Amino acid sequence: MKRIAVVGDIGSGKSHIAKLFNYPIFNADLEVAKIYKNDKACFKVLKKKLTKYFSSLPIKKEEIIKAILDNEVNLKKITKIIHPEVRKKMNIFLINNKKEDAIILDIPLLFENKLNQKGDIIIFIQSNKLEVIKRLKKRNNFNLDLLNKFKKIQLPLSYKKKKSQFIIKNNFTNKSVNRSIKKILKDIL
Image (tube, rainbow, N blue to C red):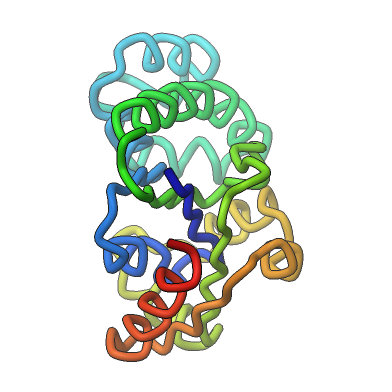
């Protein structure tokens, strides 16, 4: 099984491009959302560590945003609780898909959380910064301060790009992206 990891900037189109590969995808952001919605054990720990922010399950996005914006240390506390759960879910996904030719890892903090392995195929999604900002502003709950706090915990894009074997230039049209994907899959499979 080939492990293909899609990395890049926030809003660069990683999740959309991951789907275009047509292989099973582990999407870390979706797993985090499920944890916030359903995971009673995580909720109890979060409530204990950050009492004034979390009141009930499902945890509301506004509560998470407020906790992070109020104090940068809160983001570290939250990630310390959530990321080990995401890692467990990723390991289950890998076991369940071990017979696949390839799987896609859509994990924004792949390098930061040391989830990459030696044989991984890393694909960097490169997008126009102005286009990315324009697209991010259309998202619900877009908050520039929050975006900047998340960027602070991420490694530089130049590092991720250097560690990548392939680069997909995402101009937000499927035609050019699909051509790039076909070429990459031909090269690696």
